[in-house]
Image (cartoon, rainbow, N blue to C red):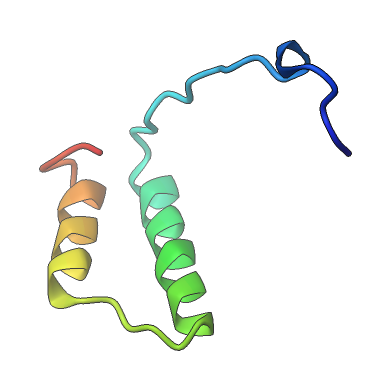
Length: 59
């Protein structure tokens, strides 16, 4: 499906979730997609994901 006009798909910002379970699942998916491409997540990224899930830091 192609948009003939950008107005067909208005920009709607997504609010950051506060659910730790949702945050954790999003990080797992992101890191899993990297693994599919043969990439590994750095320790920094894993630490950042953990802090985000624990609500120590935001996006």
